Length: 115
Image (cartoon, rainbow, N blue to C red; front, side):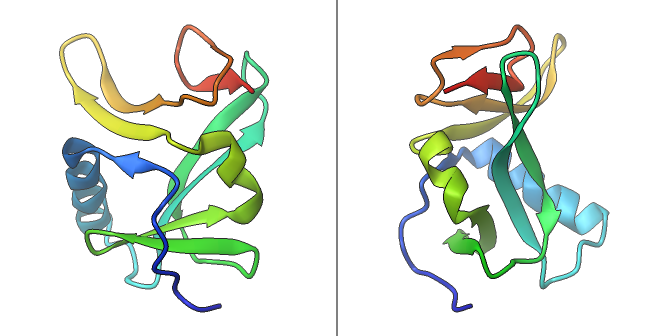
């Protein structure tokens, strides 16, 4: 399982990247962990997003974004190709936002979609 130098199929905005690094530091996430991004069945539109810290597995692709290891199951890339992850910290909402051009429809909360 070698680290890949390919371009990641998704992008993180500056705010999202800063928030991920901040969480990793605050929660003392081990150095061998990376940010796992993917999809899973469920949610009100059929599929929901995965975002969390994890160790890479054999079925994963690993990308590096400004010193952060981004981990993704190879099978998930087609569902998130071109997606941008942002972080909002406003009065009405606080959290990660997924802007996914592959989504045919999304739910009202923005955490699930159909492809």
